[in-house]
Structures are given as C-alpha cells and as structure tokens.
Image (cartoon, rainbow, N blue to C red; front, side, top):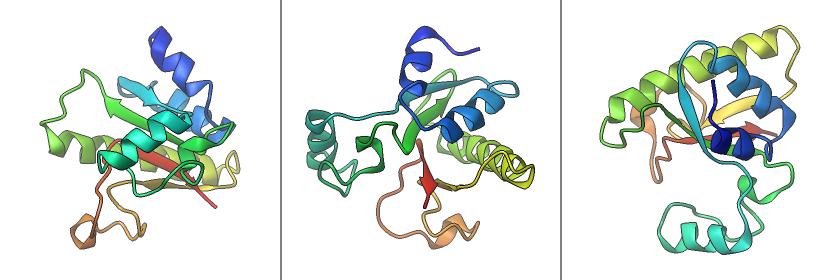
Length: 135
C-alpha cells in the first residue's frame, strides 16, 4: 500500500492517474514522487534539465495534475532496467483499464515519448519516472 506522502502526491493527480496507480500498487510496490508541481519546482526542474518546459506548460502544472512521477519501491535510481520493467506493468495496467472503458485517455511513459513501444528510438530527455495522460 502507499505511504502517506505517496497518497498526498497522488491525490493531486487526475482521477485516471489515481486509478492506474491504485491498481498498480495491488501488484507491485511503488512510490509516488510528485503529482502537482508548483511554479518554483517546475522552474527548478527546467534549470536542472529534468523538464523541457517552463511553468505553466508542464503536465504537472495543472490541478488536477495530468502527470505523476513514480518509482518502483524500494527506490534505486541506479537500476535503470527496473524502471523499464516497472513501466511495462504500469502501461499494461493502463491499457487494461482503457479496454475496460474505465479510462478515456492513453498513458504516456517518459521513456517512450512517441508511444511506439520501442525504447531504442527515443531521442532527448528520458524521464523514467514520468507518466502522463495523453490528450
């Protein structure tokens, strides 16, 4: 189950993101790092190269947030393969929920921006904790 900080962050996200990750947590432990992102945090993420967008143009900058940053738990940012493994579970859950007509949006993973299920052709920022609703 989610800890209190994860629940707090997830509560700032769009209902469909809450649905996805409340389902994911039934199968694999994870931590919600961030949902809504304030102007100061967005500008800091931009300055650090963690985002390509200034506030208010990021998907995290809306209420409810159209994006969340999530990591498998326990957190180990050095184990890149684990992020791809986790993304497969998350994307599978989202696809299942959409096929059941519980979601209207597709989910986009920050390691496969073009959503073609081929992580080898990605160029630019690989944001392996990022999931957003595609509009």
